[in-house]
Image (tube, rainbow, N blue to C red; front, side, top):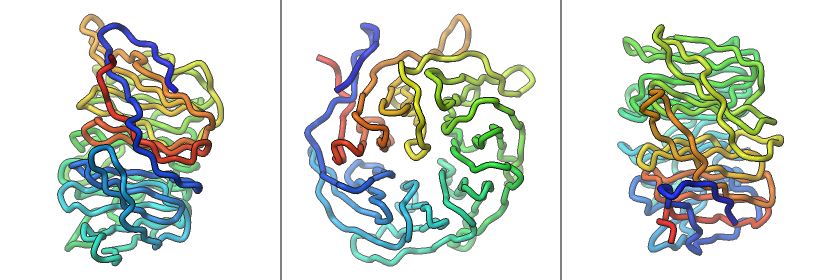
Length: 331
């Protein structure tokens, strides 16, 4: 069931396509491959693989190498490998040949507590950045086919709840309980460029473009829009309404921006809101307008988008279903 607030020009919604898989235990992480033919699911501490074709999901294999639940999944386009992070403090690099072999390539165990978020440099895919409950951000670089820690940022004094990397791969933002930090990639290194103190606890940040990112505070029915000023610093410009309710949440359904569809997904309590993003020519800023609100019966909702923005995958603790919705022109 969805609640929609949209103009006449916004005629696309995510609609269920009848593709469902029953999973009674929590599924909290998802990733599609680039052709949308495989779906990878973090099912508690297991990695599951499904084929996806003609609107149908088919179970293929399951792997149990993590000891605690999987917190994130990322698919690497170049190598076709899978990266999983977990509450067991580890990161596993899985081979593209998972369907024929259960062996993983490498296990990274340098974090001391749960890994809460992880992103991949999107162009060369030669950096992994992970944020943890141990209050560190770790930058991993690949050398001689092995991932090693190139840099560890400490002194955050709180867990790292969210990470977002610019589509060009040259900027990164991190969110802790008190600070948003902006990093720049310069001379083969990541350097801290700006540290923004915020007064409101939140769980999600997301880059829209080089000039704009958003921060979603908890217990609020709006999100902050940060824009780049003439000094090259991000400052808060506006607040944007999100939905009617604001309740406790968790961070495992990250804020997502899809450039192909110019949409942002924000999960708040038991709602998943889809915003249409467009540039305001008069103000030279980005406008965010609610395109659709998908309502669930519970707060435990997790999901992701396919890279092309065609499919939204979710699991919720009420229906206990992995559900697929497709970006469809409204009739």
